[in-house]
Every structure is written in structure tokens, then in C-alpha cells.
Image (cartoon, rainbow, N blue to C red; front, side, top):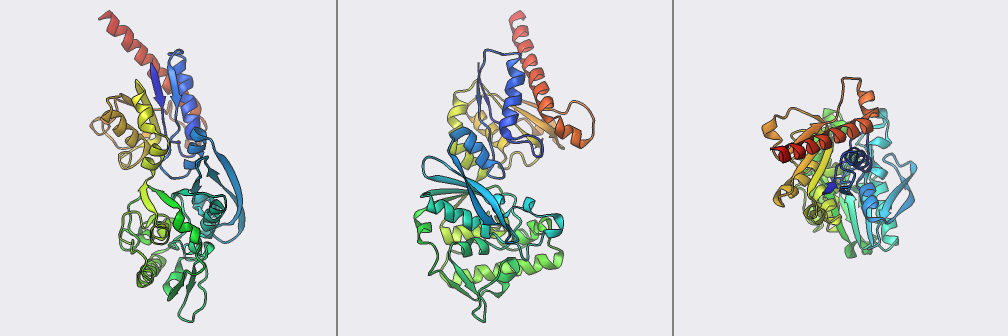
Length: 381
């Protein structure tokens, strides 16, 4: 029996590779002779480069960059053997780099992302995959583009500072110093949100509050992004503000499309294609996937939903193991042949997180035992 184990990470408890190991450990206690393939997955957000490194190798490059508040930090990105760089914007400009008191999208900058891109260009990258999850910024890539040599000026012809509020003063764009190598690189943006740049569903309105913006600041940021898009259009840049995903990472999606010719793709689809997931599924007799919480968003570009769709299309049965099932009835989980939560007993959340590996392994053992019992019953009857 060939078993493909391809889960997402379980947030705050297990990396995707650890989930793989726990499931294999449990199943192999019942099916020691099965042929196991471990393929950790991600949807383009945090952990994507770790997943690709696990499956494809490559090497990590450590770089000194500026964090969202322009403090020097060390961030890394992945270089694969085929001149592909994998950059998670959150490693340089992520919300996790700030304390709750430091969150302020009026001033936070994506400058560090541009520094990672610049280093990848220096390493000879011809393809750059950028994951947009977990940003602390709402500057539409102002900082990133500045790091790559673009210059942005206000009405007094002074350089803009850092942060999303600065875009309200933009009057002139100078791309003379913008790194020419950008046009020779294929940019693929792994993005799991569909928000436009501005408006009621835009970057500022939907994601601004979690980055520290109050209602007044949200309105201010939205107007600033709209001004940025208007000036970009005046300079003949592609107006991508209404394209799904333009509002990802505080408008970084817009900047990458308009200035770098980037293609925005589903994060899951990007990772699945890079890892040849379809071929792995075709070679399997059973697929086991999973995520921390199975809910209504599972079918909307998340790992478990995407894997189920691919497995069903190829006639391969699929099991989902998850931390919990939130608000779904059985008829809403029919995309999976079996759905099994892992929590073994009621206990405080931190203990649940601490015991995640053991709970996963135990659940895998019980699932495998149920499968073995089914095989025995089919022989008897």
C-alpha cells in the first residue's frame, strides 16, 4: 500500500514536516510494510520556504535587512538549484516582528522585502516566488520598491519617508534608478487572499485593524493607497488595483504586479506545482492530509481542501486529520472520505498545543487500526 502524507502545518504547535512524521509513526505501527511518502505542504504563507526546502533541498541565505520599523535584523530566504529564490515577506516585514504596542501601519515599511529581492538578484535568481502572508505593513510596497531603486516624491519634490501614510503625499515617481534586472525575472506571488487594493474589501479596511490601525487611520490609509494607484496610472504603470489579490500584504500584491510584472497565483497552487503534487497523488493508494482547524475556509485555497480536490479528481481516497472541526456538519466535509480531529481530551489550550505531536500520533494509530479492522471484516464477510 502506497500512502502519501501531505499536511499543512498546525499553527502554533507543529511544522508540516512534524505532522508528517507523527502520522507516519502512528500508521507504521499498524502497517509497517506500507510505502510512505512524506510531502509537507503550505499555502504560500509562513512556512512555505521551509516546506520547499524539505522537499527540494536548496540552501538558505542569511541577509541583514530592515524590519517594519527600519531596525536591522537578520532574515533568510531559500535558493533552489534552478535559480529560483523563495522569499516569505513576513521574514523581513512580518507582524510577528513587532510587539502589540509597535503595530502601526501608518509607519511600518516593506523595505526589508526589497532588500531580500535585491540579494536574490545578486545571487542570479531568474525566478522569484514570494509568499505574502503575515505582513505588518500597509505601504503598497513603497518600502520594497525604494529598496530596489525607485524614488517617490511629494509636492515639494522631497523624497517620501517610510510607511503607508506617506503615500497620501505622492506626486512624482522616478524609476531611473529602479533595478533593471527586475524586468528579466519571473515573479510568482503566492497569495491566498482575493482583496483589491482599496475600498470596503481593500487592504486597509480588511487587514488594517489587525496591524494596529483604528477606524480613522483605516480611512486615511485607504485614501493613501488610492492616491498611490492614481499616480501610478499617470506614469503609465499597469493599474492593478482592482485585481483579486492586489490588496494582499498591505498592497504589496499591487506593487509586485504593477512594477515587477508579477503573476498572482493561489499559494497552494504554486506550492503544489513546484512539488509535483499531482504526480505524487497519482502514485498513491491513499492520501492523508490535514490542518490545524477544518472550517469553512478549508475549501477556499487552503491545503487540505486543495489536496482533497486533486485526490478526488484522480479517484484516490483522502483522509483529513485536523486539530479541530469548527462548525461543520458531516455533509459539509464530504470532500474527504474520513475527517478525524486529534484532540484526545479536554484540557487548557496550551496543553493541547504542547501535546499536538502525541495527539496526532495517537489519532493516526487509531485510524490505521480502524482500516486494518475493515480489511479483516471484508475478508470475513
